[in-house]
Length: 155
Image 1: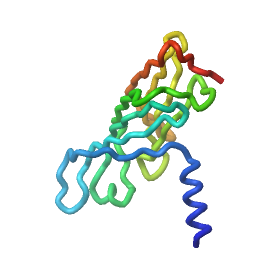
Image 2: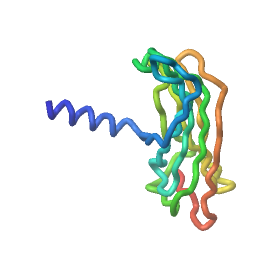
Image 3: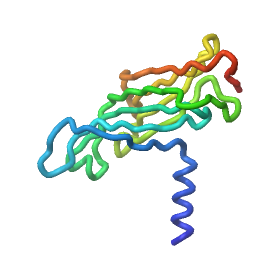
Image 4: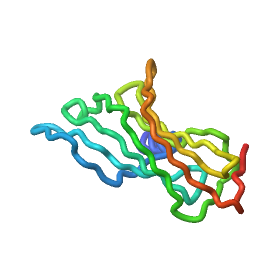
């Protein structure tokens, strides 16, 4: 049993960035099942110390939501901020996915991609939703300027 728990924990940790829930607000009232919500989560950029991203997204309630079978809407917003000294943990790609979370039982995710604007020495973060067959054009973007004295190390 210990081996199974260790394997699950290891695989979960290796799958990428995890978000912490900051809070949520209900958007509908459901008498006998969970309400629909807007959830606010935060995650740290895995490759850039001193940058945190706040992500808000819809979470479907009801019985399907409680069982994890509902498909959340594609509405999401991101705001990334410098929360300490910026420190690169190594060279970074011009474009890289830094976060993803499942928003339906199968095939739909909310993703955050970090892009580098070399000319302005800025990190740009884009949130969007994708689906196996058709994604959504709904998106949000934010940027974190890096001090001019700290060039962004690119791969």
